[in-house]
Length: 349
Ligand SMILES: NC(=O)c1ccc[n+]([C@@H]2O[C@H](COP(=O)([O-])OP(=O)(O)OC[C@H]3O[C@@H](n4cnc5c(N)ncnc54)[C@H](O)[C@@H]3O)[C@@H](O)[C@H]2O)c1
Image (cartoon, rainbow, N blue to C red; front, side, top):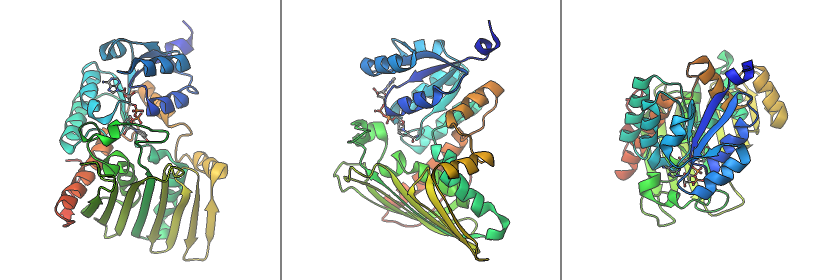
């Protein structure tokens, strides 16, 4: 057996839909990947995934788990909890897509399961690897920027029951849990806290323009942060099919204004400083600067494999995801009460 073969991590997949295929594309450039089993309740999806990757189509979830070292859980959200428990019981490394669960209780139970099992784990809070957000965080963290005063975050995408996602489950509250805030903007909640700090109080307002009960498609959060900053998050699912996912972010610090415009991965990121300096970075140049500074790995899924190889979790992990669920849950409780301010418990629970 060559050293390379000895280093191989057998990767299994539960769910072979949209995001599983995104991971497959990223993993193909990782040399330690050994394609193990794939199972999807829609067998044709597992077969298409197997044809693309060389994975073996399995007859059930157990067969995948029995033949892998690390598993990617990429089913619709309501299945995550059960599958994470099955994987953790076998001591496997777990990559689980966001949101962890359809509600906070499920997410808390999953985080506890992973804590007890002490397995390497990661969640799909992928904005943490975005060159644009990494550069923004770097600007904010600079001592000369002063304290963060405010954040304004707008996220819109067409409702993903159509277009490239074309999922029916996102319109089914029993499988998705809720609408745009939980299913999509849990990314935003996570990245906002990683940029600004913990949210202390939230007021939420939500609406259901598409008329799907429990699947809100317009949400506005007004937030105060433990460090005194204030902010807003607006998340909308509309029907403009030309707009897949668009985020516009502006952060104001005492001595710095910075923004992400157009593309939440490649920018441009623009900034102006109190001393007169200003700048703009986007595209490949932004990526090169971020990667050269070691602010993010070039390939997020390589980071997970490196963590598996090294036997330690690098994150974002289940604890980070649970924290985002805590905030989202507080926001929904506020919205259900007409927007009354709700305190966000500190920490993970
Ligand atoms: N990180 C991100 O940016 C990102 C992007 C898209 C989706 N997601 C998340 O990934 C998950 C999947 O989303 P998607 O867009 O790939 O949906 P999808 O509908 O394209 O794929 C989900 C697949 O899971 C399969 N499935 C359901 N139950 C299963 C089970 N018990 N075992 C095996 N397969 C099962 C379905 O048949 C379907 O093929 C969701 O939780 C979603 O929120 C994350």
